[in-house]
Structure formats: C-alpha cells, structure tokens
Length: 240
Image (cartoon, rainbow, N blue to C red; front, side, top):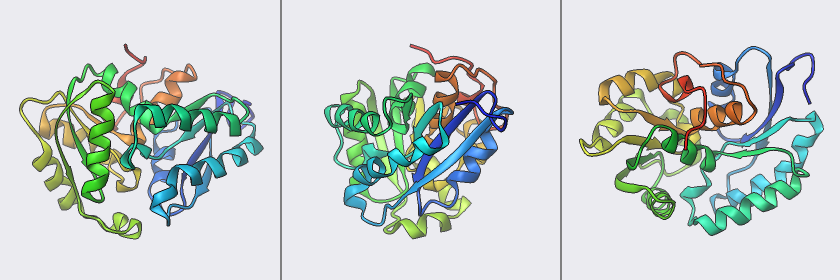
C-alpha cells in the first residue's frame, strides 16, 4: 500500500540474512517514490533455502506491500519448472495473493526481453549449483552453451570474492556464440560493475539482483529507466 515514504509503491524484498550486499544494491536501484522494506531468511542450511524463504514470506505483510520480491536464485538447487510452479503457489498462499516476483521468473523475463536464446551461466558457489541452473533454463527453453562457478564453498565467503576474481570468471564464461551472460547468486554483488562488464564482453548481462528489481518495477507499472546498471534497467517494458 503506497505510503508517504513510497507514494509510488511499497516493495517487500526477501533476501538472505547472510547476504551483505543485496540490501544496498536494491537501494542503489530504487527510484524516487518507492519504499523498499527488507525481510531476511536464513540460508545456513543450503538444502532448505526455498522452505526458509516461504517461512519468512508471511512477515512481509506487516508493511502492507504492493509487491513482494523474493530475491534468491532457487534454481541453483535441484530445480525444475514444475517445482518452481509449486513453490510460487506456496509463496502466494503465504502472502495472501499479493503481487509476487521471484528472482527466477525475473531472470527468465529479462533474458526474453533482451532477445537472448543462447546463454552462458555464472554462479558463485559450486558446480552442483551451476549444473542445476543449467538444467532449469534448458527446460525453460534456452540453449545453455556453458557454465562456470567461483568455487566458493560457504556463503560467508562470497562477500570476500575479489573484483579480479569476478572479471576473470566473466572472461572464462564469455563465448562468441552466446546472446547474453546470466549471473545467478545475488550475494556476489556486481550491479555497479555491469556497465563495465557489458562493454568489455560486448553483450548484455542479466544479473539476478538487477533482474529481480527491474521486473518488480515494470510489473508494478513503474517504467523509469535506471541509469548506471547495465542495459536491462534501461528497458522500460517487459518484452515477449
């Protein structure tokens, strides 16, 4: 429900307790007149991340949100289109049917909007996460040409990944025959690097935090181009 701090809308954003960069990144992208309210869930047990997010979801109703944004890449964990549909249904039930955006749906919509058919995927943690994500996006209709990961074993270590590590990973994953690079795992924190990376690679990057917030804004009817964070946030509408 719009309020004096967010006359254009109140967004309840659910992010992990352990991700130090996501809250400031959402604030960097926030246009005037939008109120971001942040809610946290625990990812210390990586095997039950979707369940932990569902358990946290009902708390978002306390700020009377216009939109609930679930900012976690659940497709990195033995995921499928069928599982995602069931997951969204459970989330929707917890938030009494409020408008809902998941990071997974946002990345899918972003890739379609940018016209990407062939993609490469970068994740921060282990091979299993990258392979699960690859399977999900292939099932969703994309051709995944390659994937890589940064070999981060524990969530606590993601924030310590260096800029050089990130640049090296994007160099490794880049291919001449891809339309876009998809970055999953919101704790990596790269939105301020997106313009530089896109210029270097010569192709768009769909980064999960940027995609989730862009999709939430556009779904809510806010079309402001957001400068400084890559091509996607300059797109005023969600494409087919």
